[in-house]
Image 1 (tube, helix red, strand yellow):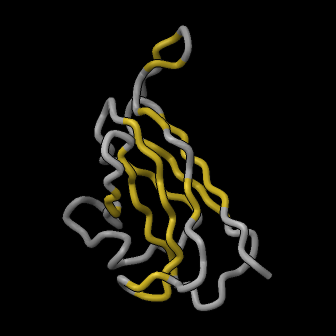
Image 2 (cartoon, rainbow, N blue to C red):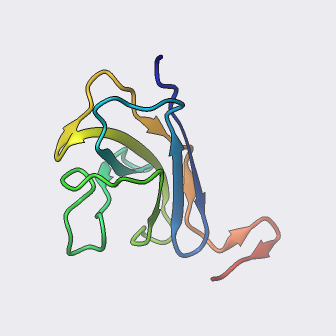
Length: 116
């Protein structure tokens, strides 16, 4: 069965929550690398696994199907790419990453301003 990746990102004024699904178990997958992609320049940066002083999710793949970007730059617009990994710094071959739509980290929510 071919994996059918899907992902969603939900932003508020403080962080972005990212969740994903590949529709089927991924043989040989030990976890995922989550990359933040900046809309302004397309630069993709792997998130840190557990805080900025720890390895990135490339080097230390996470074994979950959701993650929070707690260090996202405020006011920026980003999408997220979720890459299945077969080991540290080693993407799972032949599996397309899941990608989210772009979200903006802002307190603006329609006619209201939301703060957490």
